[in-house]
Image (cartoon, rainbow, N blue to C red; front, side, top):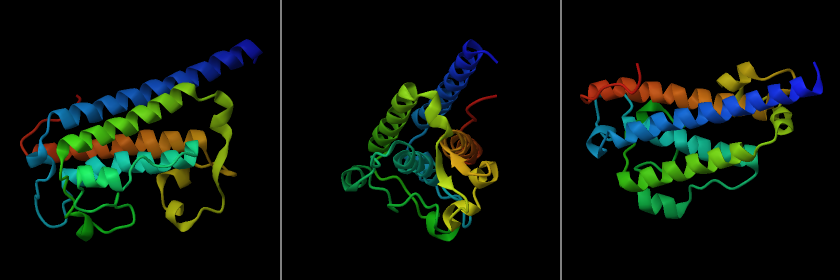
Length: 196
């Protein structure tokens, strides 16, 4: 492969990552714009997480993992919590379904602002990302317990999870997974899906 071919491949890879992340984020924007607090805070029954869980969980996890990839502090802090007023001030990754069925969004408009802030920061960072950064190992093997049972642990190479693995798993795959949950749950509150 020539240097020109390598440069073109690197460009295609980064371009694809950027476009997919931006497109996935548009699904989230469309979802929140076509729901209200009555939809996201709806309690269906015991054992069924409300939309509020996935709706906060994914942007907050993207925010938290941004610190691992970019070395910057998460956006979420006491000020955001005082504005958004999540019933449970936690993304819930280490909590049970029995605990997280009580998740509710207090101020839906403030939540939209938070989500937008997180997504815009991620997209700006991706826009400036250099190809060489994708190969950096951020979680070496052996994986700690909090990572060992994740999808990213299955994807990680022999040296561990790279920046590219994390973007693909923690951000893209994770965002699509929870959007699928939201699309299914929208049917429970009388709304349609987001894509065909």
